[in-house]
Length: 325
Image 1 (cartoon, helix red, strand yellow):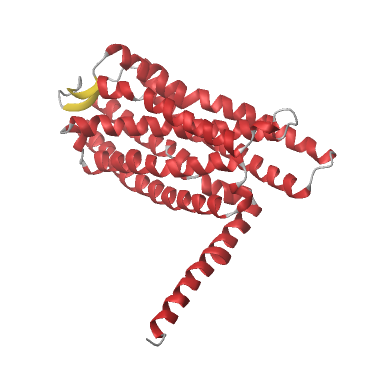
Image 2 (image 1 turned 120 degrees about the vertical axis):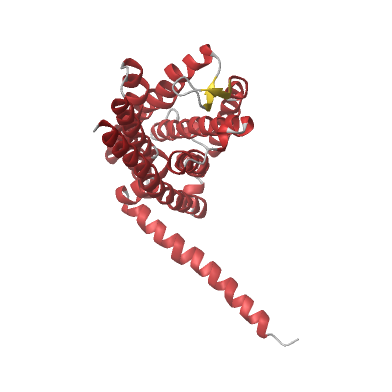
């Protein structure tokens, strides 16, 4: 009886990884590509530092989905795991996974802070593309340096559970940092606190601007970006907390001794992990739901800019083909 339950749970875990993973992957790839197209095509976004952070986030999200989620689908869904046979791939995958996550969450925090500072007269001068580009460069450098120990302390090592070779942390101190601080704090609660705090402050501030003489274009843009940032923060709280709480706090506090409880744990981790990847796949759809202006901008970019661009290239190509030689 217990073996049937275990087999059913393993099948459910496998199906969750494959179907849930591919759904999140493809929706995320489409959404992030459209985000990059919109943020780089419209002048109102190209000149806004908060949109610059959101654009960088969308671009790095693509790498996170490919390196993190797609490889996870292959590993857990199809048992295709080259990190078990190659030390280089083991270290490179984990380095890219952690570094891109840290860059993404840093840019999300920058966007929330920037949107609040933009609405204040005293600190508004800090919200420039020059400052934003420097902060992004610093974030890349810091988190790339932060990832160097991964190449030192990660390697192929027999797992404690079954003795199989796996990509594991081989240093006790770094293992504690990895499981007790990096994921639950740096990639969990800390960015959420920063984004919630400054998102709410920006929301309060933008409501106060109604009573002041603010140019209507600037006011609408500030309201749009504030709403996009704030709702995205609320969604990320929902998708981040279940994975962080269960995987890094509850699982470390509870001992799973029998096979049924172990497979139940694997299923819950798979479900919460897929939900967690919503951080990197859903922003575009949040922006579309929250902002009617963003939906109009999407239609304008796809139809009025890019369709006319490709239509013009096609017409020129046809004219060149029929031109007399």
